[in-house]
Image (cartoon, rainbow, N blue to C red; front, side, top):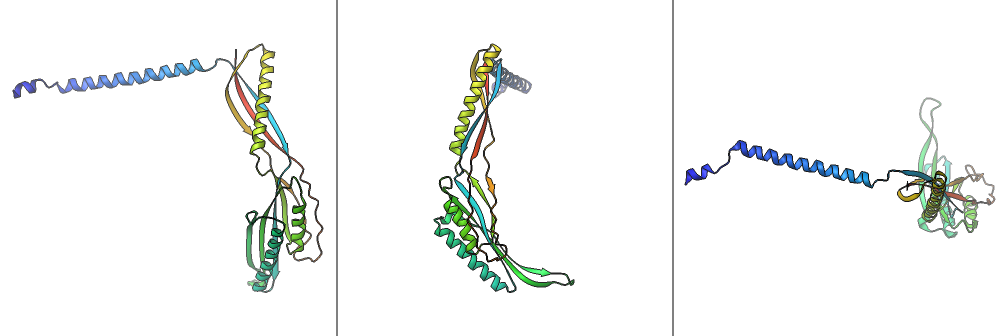
Length: 259
């Protein structure tokens, strides 16, 4: 019995040969399948296409103003400078809140305190101290009324601020405007493609691809001078802020099948 069982075992060279053939057949099948898929993709791809770009533009008034307001204090005593700066900043912030600005729209964006040094004699000499703190304020609804913004710019200076770096006017939520601009851009591209196909004697088919090139809108910087450098005492006059308008631009490229 033992000798009969041993006689039924295939030779090692035959097993290895059959395994190699099986691997070769599998590999050949994979290559053939890839070739069939590639041929299918080629057959599905339009033979003739045209690419057309369209532009869409939406105009809107900025509804958000962002302004940086700061207090710079100098003096001979570190404690006096710190206290003086803190008192002025706190007074400015309290005034801003009185204008209806929410806590979430007031943020400390810069704080520094350091000794002023003189090296003219070749040795270090502290001649004073300087403290500086800046808050960034968001004023909403300026497309309807700029009164609150103008009061904040004017009143902050009157309450101790001596630095106003500028006003940036932007659209707070531009998504809806961007979507509208995209629709206009697609409509423009379709119109151009139809005209181009007619002029060339072609039949316009379906859209086979769409791509976007957003140009967007940008904040409009507006300078505001406080005239209150380093503790000057004269009162400021309220500025007349003009919000103007901003453009949201979108460019869409459509590829059409033509026959």
